[in-house]
Amino acid sequence: MSNKTIKSALISVFSKDGLEPIVKELNKQGVTIYSTGGTETFIKNLGIDVVPVEDVTSYPSILGGRVKTLHPKVFGGILNRQNHDGDVKEMKDFDIPQIDVVIVDLYPFEKTVASGASNQDIIEKIDIGGISLIRAAAKNYADVICVSSVDDYAEFLELITDKKGNLSEADRKAFAAKAFNVSSHYDSAIFNYFNADQTIPALKISETNGKVLRYGENPHQKGFFYGDFDALFTQLHGKELSYNNLLDVDAAVNLIQEFKGEKPTFAVLKHNNACGFAQRDTVLQAYVDALAGDPVSAFGGVLISNTEIDEACATEIHKLFCEVVIAPGFTTEAEAILKGKKNRILLVLKDTDFAPTTVRTCLNGVLVQDKNNKTDQIEDLTYVTNSKPSNDAIADLIFASKICKHTKSNTIVLVKNRQLCASGTGQTSRVDALNQAIHKAVSFNFDLKDSVMASDAFFPFPDCVEIAGNAGITSVIQPGGSIKDQLSIDYCNDNNIAMVMTGTRHFKH
Image 1: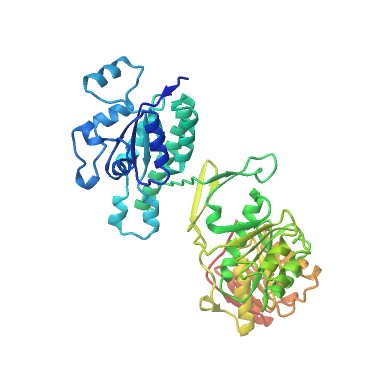
Image 2: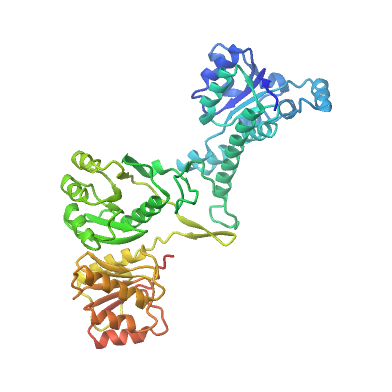
């Protein structure tokens, strides 16, 4: 691999932050600098000589700046092969200057879209010259080094300073990889903007924030997280989150969002399912009653609250070994208490929008679907039995339905007085899920008399409502839709059980 000393640079950037020391170092090393527009003015204002690109191309910037660098003398200077006799001859014949460095920072397309700008403003932020320069310079990394983002300015400055501008092919190739990362992400963002209605059945996912995890789901598996974790959370304390922690945190956050703005609500999750859940007048009581749902499973779990955690609640939490505690805030006293365990992870949940779709690998491809944003409301209920649930029972039914929606199918959720008594999760039959839930509830001393039951899907037979009625359950919420719905309705009518249907299934696999 050959080393090459930088003798010339083309600089055309959107962001000037951090550019000044680079320009000064290049000037110090005697590098000829070419530039355009605002970048050219910026360099001149530093008192440093700069050659306008127009002097090279004999062509001005035209069309309101849309065309500045798109010219054979610019791209010839970048794409020529310095060890190719034909290229060397043509460079001389056409008086094309060699360009050894290209520094570009693209128009901020994604930020412009996120700002809610007009379509016209967004279109003008589709970079043409810059993206072309990046692709050309990165392609010809054998002779040229490409700095493709303001995020790489500092690394490039350190490199040219330490090596006095004499860079190896390995250096140039490493920056070429960064460049194609930038260009591919940029193009994906533009495509997704144009394909917002998904008329083209193509999937472009690009995440440039990547993190290597300690391992994956198990120690023998590699694990990575791609996403902007800091946009969702502020981590106050604890070790780095693991692959499994992240899955539980995702499940916890999606569940607690259902109770945003409501009375203090607390959840304890294990393996992506709620094993404890309660809503009370204080966050302390919500935690205590959530923990009572399954204090055994809570060991090593993830805890989340929809309201600030105070000193009294933190004191109780501190008695439990748990991996993660999440809340929209912690009082100073609560934070100090919970930091008493070295590895306990404390996360402040920010008010942030979440992705509108879910994505998972399947066979040799990918499955994508809209996120399940449907939450059952009172106005969705159809009262199908002679007995109607009381207002208090309806509140419990809606509460249970929200938990059920976020529990692995097949699932049954049992609730009483806004407290999760138990759930049957991930079972192969609904009867098994119900029996599991009843067994757990009884084992933790819950009285199921006048409790309610939620199911994520319809009952194909009346066996579940019969089992539920025998356990003391008096109200049921389910989607309905079975050709044998009437059998379950008839059993409820004969046994004074109230049942409502929502019309919405909530499978979660």
